[in-house]
Amino acid sequence: MRRKYFGILLGVVLLLLALRLWHIRADFPDYRFYIQERSEFTDEGFYTSAALNHFTLGHAYIPGGWNPGVFMPVWPLMVGLLFHFTGISVTAARTLAVVCTWLSVILAYAVARQYRSVTFSLLTVFLATANALGFFYSRLAVLEPAFVLFLLLAIYLAGRVRTGNYVMAIMVGLVFTAMTLTKTTGPFVLPAVLYPIWACNRQDRSAAWKLIAVAATTALLLLGGVRLYWTHHYLQDSKIILGMNPLWQLENSPSRLLRFFLRGTWVDPVLFPLAVVSFAAAVLSLRFLWRDTLFATALLWETGYAAFIVFHYDGPPRYFVALIVPTIWLALIFTEWLWQQHRRIAVGVAACIAVSLVWNLLCIGNYLLHPRFGLVNASIEIKRIIVAQHLDDPKSNMLLIGRGTEEISLLSGGIPAIDSDGAMPVQEKLNVYHPGWFMRWTGHVPARMKTVGAYRHLTKRASFPELSRIRRTGIVLYQIYP
Image (cartoon, rainbow, N blue to C red; front, side):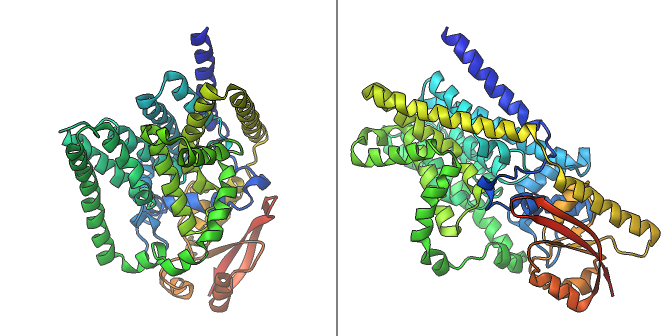
């Protein structure tokens, strides 16, 4: 009977993983729940831009442009290798993100299985695959799927490091380096990566410290070398993309911390509060939980990434994707204790989790049954207009400039595009790159459009209204004339 239930659960997991490929080109869900999210309009293009530029402009780096690929090169490198075989394709890029999620689910099971039962591990992957937030973002070609993959791999390898196995410790450092070069938030979760090494070798503390030192030194030496390279070759880009004002960041951190606890329910309205309660219980009474390797690792992961969100700024929903797995672990560990010590309370908690699970599945089902393709269709039409104009007038420049233009390039199958952000002022970009087209998002008239309008004549060529019904956001396409 137990095998039968396990089989059903595994079947649902595999189905939910496969459904991530269903309508893969569809727009991000237009739910009010994600009203603060704008990554569906920009971030896929941002973080694949180096690969896009390589194939459309002939070089990955754009002097004075918006170049996140310099500092987070792993994802555009993965996408670029894929584009070598498929050509520029949003289907290929998003499928790569889905594959990263599949591997992350396997690793989440493997890490949990290092310290827990098959039942606990299977429930982990079931709740992870049924999570609506994770489902939606695993279908976007953004950094989070690959980041979580490398983080889970590093934690898994750390749990296999044993006394004298310095090669495995070096591997942990290498994977951590790859993770940080995927998304620069990596240092905030370094304690979560190193803790399993300590926990698995605490009998010989001297050996444990040596292993931790080897793993950390590997990562720090590599990342230090990369940092020096950035400073020497890409100082201006570094100031634009990595620059922070620590005093400003800390000024409103208490209020951002309070909002973090509210926004944590984006992960799950039941599991996240349970994770917070598990932390409070461990502090107040359940001290034995601190000796639990999986609990301590999950807590270090959760608190480290929370520190990044609070310090950086109020993170949009996509930032919380990295918190799904540790939230599930903390919630399940606490529920497991309740089941053993307070069965009636545990039954109520399990019922709440079941209700939340149904809500997540209904959100996923509604999204898959009612797909919208407004943004991809608009992108294809923008490319058609630009190409048609170039055929009529071969001297016209096909280069598109504006906020989020790389997203349009990715969704349309590839057109030359440069974001209007970056180290070089917009008016200088007009003189250096001579773009033939400009696009803006409706809802406001940004300063960059006023700048372009002051130096060039703009003729409206197309409009694509209400690509987002909640925010009533659309695109207006202009042709640029001297």
